[in-house]
Amino acid sequence: MDIAHNIEAVRERIARAASKAGRSPDDIMIVAVTKGVEESSILGAIEAGIKDFGENRVQEAERKIMRLSDQGVHPAWHMIGHLQRNKVQTALKIFDIIQSIDSIRLAQSISEQAERVVPVLLQANVAGEETKGGFGTDELREAVTEISRLPNLSIMGLMTIAPMVDNPEDVRPVFKELRRLRDSFGLEHLSMGMSNDFEIAIEEGATMVRLGRIIFGERQ
Image 1 (cartoon, rainbow, N blue to C red):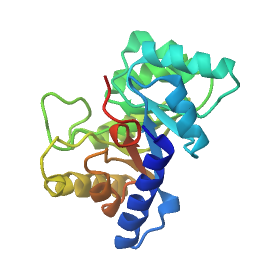
Image 2 (tube, rainbow, N blue to C red; image 1 turned 30 degrees about the horizontal axis):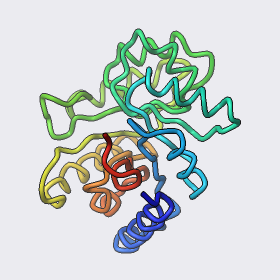
Image 3 (cartoon, rainbow, N blue to C red; image 1 turned 30 degrees about the vertical axis):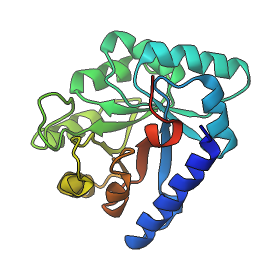
Image 4 (tube, one colour; image 1 turned 180 degrees about the vertical axis):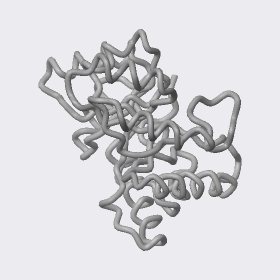
């Protein structure tokens, strides 16, 4: 597994997708998803220029982040999975950004326990999938209004997990809708697109793409 080669190939694909949309690839952040990935591979990605990493589970993330921190390695860490309220205190110690705010109660818990301003994204369930978390599109306006009033939180934008489909074109409407919602709230970031559909997401305005398999290979 040549991680540096994979990252170079990803950057080329991002550049092509950005060019197609009349955008600069510099405006698109790669968040390398490291669920199930060893520290040695994370170090390889850092050497290849990746600065942002995403983890799905607090317990697994804490072990990795602390071990890397002990080695003087401090990239930006994004919480991208469902965050339970009883794990908020630990999450605040290890994550720089929380992308997966999926309820007002979770936002309130973070606000109450934070000792700094925490950048957050609100997770939107654009496709209305019952198995996915996040605010429904009809719930987002109230969520943005309520959460923006909380101290210690800064809403950076919106995040979504698109349905898994065989043809990435099928999820283009999901990305279009998230961009429309983001624009309606005057927010900056769109975290959307993963290994199977990131180019479509970029064409539709993604500013963050969350890539795991395409960088690190299939997880065990």
